[in-house]
Image (cartoon, rainbow, N blue to C red):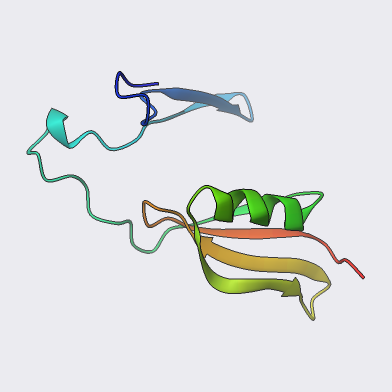
Amino acid sequence: MADDGKRIMHAHLELHGGPLMLNDDFPEMGDGQGSPPPAGVGLHLDVADADAAWERALAAGATIRFPLDNQFWGQRYGQVTDPFGHIWSIGGPVTE
């Protein structure tokens, strides 16, 4: 966590045996302008409970891009945009 208590300074994940390091934007470390919203990048989460993940995303400030619903292809699926502009799709088993 950064000194401001709001931004992630360093997150280190391991995927298939390799590192993936992430951090929030720190405009003060560059030109002061901050990074523009991402374009053309989508991230997908496949989870056991899409409704619970959906509610967590909304509680964290995400906005609905494509409503969560049971889809014709047999998955509960929807899309949100996080406060930084990243598009996330959330999918899981269909609920009755």
